[in-house]
Amino acid sequence: MPVSVARLAGHAAKRVCLNAARPQLRTALPTRTIARPLSTTLARRYAEIADGERTRMIPTTEDFSTPIQPEDPEALEEHDDEVHSARKIRHYTVNFGPQHPAAHGVLRLILELNGEEIVRADPHVGLLHRGTEKLIEYRTYLQALPYFDRLDYVSMMTNEQCFSLAVEKLLNIDIPIRAKYIRTMFGEITRILNHLMSVLSHAMDVGALTPFLWGFEEREKLMEFYERVSGARLHAAYVRPGGVSQDLPIGLLDDIYQWATQFGDRIDETEEMLTDNRIWIGRTKGVGIVSAADAINYSFSGVMLRGSGVPWDIRKSQPYDAYDRVDFDVPVGVNGDCYDRYLCRMEEFRQSLRIIHQCLNDMPAGPIKVEDYKIAPPPRAAMKENMEALIHHFLLFSKGYTVPPGETYSAIEAPKGEMGVFLVSDGSERPYRCKIRAPGFAHLACMDQISRGHLLADAVAIIGTMDLVFGEGDLTYLPKHVVRLLTSLQLIGSGWCSERNGMALACDTRRQTVHTVPLLFLFESQSTFACSFDRKKKETIALSCAVLC
Image (spheres, rainbow, N blue to C red):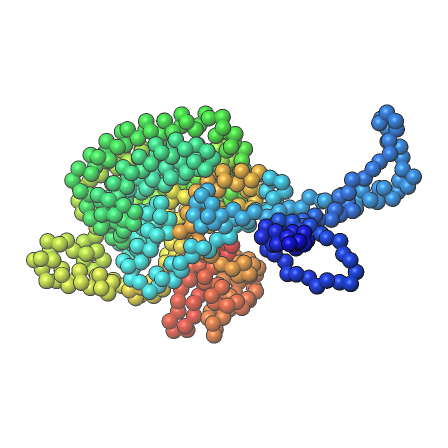
């Protein structure tokens, strides 16, 4: 029985084809049979080549030596100009962080690059802003102390020390000499803790991993000293207004002495790996140079200021606690680059050890807090024998103690720079205003000026030498328009300001000018005010106004 060959071919095509097409109606005109592919993928369509990217044929001589001039050279030059203008090199933007491991926290750095050269660096802060200064206004003076442990969470006890000194100034009290030596000794232990983290993480960011592993063994020993004296490894809350929370446990001074005798060798080992290393020198020497004049104008402090050749140390110029009873030197740099700042921190290791040895030898016996039970809690034995001591303890931790009205500014030489607390009291159990001056904010604000002209890889070295911690750096977060507003005011010298319906009327007596700004902008700024509150006139009088933005 004859079978049509076309019919068999049609059935075979339907079985083999992945997606059989619908049968089409026959047309009157005969059509040519088109073979269908096995795959249903559409045919590729290549992008059309632009006119400026096409291959242009230039006539040459027979030996291909000198090209023959075209008939229309002007048209050829215009065509080349159009091609070059279309391919002009433009700056591109890179987001550095906030997840970058070398950002040292939640730093978002927007870098504008020309190739690998940094043209502009725009740091964005505020990702760790927690409103600490406002929270302190709703806590008693003792309850506000743990907030300072959370600011610079690498050097905790120095933050507590700064706040405690400010409260003690308002209370007009003097703590026992043993408490001063304990504060000084643990302040230097905290300085070593901070510098270990700073130098070792800086080396790891650049590419040296071994110092980081070796140095953290020493940090672990220091954290054990924290735990033995306060019960906490990180947030100690040990240094309090009126002294320290408790006396040193038995055997702690001997263990600190044994650690201090061998820590000098660990410093030498770290310097052997880094100081004369040609890779380390190449990555840090001549990078991030800041002159002495620029460091002062940028409000630098700490190692960032001393590395530029300015011998300024608050422990020497304005000694506090027992720093006037110990002897030490202040290391100063020469060139103001990352390498000099590294050398300053390495020398501060040895000077801190020198202070610790003096505190161990000269620390006297005696009380560790003031004997005023309205400020410092009574001992536990006294609470079991005396009802009055128990009442003092209950009122102290439930209601708190009152501080006389006034204002003060207390500054210490923290490991990262000048840590300041401006404290205003209205006579109640809670601070009326607590303004914290964090050293890292001023350093980060000049990232653009320091890193401009350097390579992208140098940004990591510059950030590492600044020793940034954003628990304190994000305290003074302000929108850009607020900073511009405060900068335009320029309240320098003596002046006053008063509150009127949520607005602040600021008068600069030197320039004889009056400015009206929102009150929030004036008092939530990175400005230092010596203010007093007049209850009768209900005015806040600023005796000294200085805009630091």
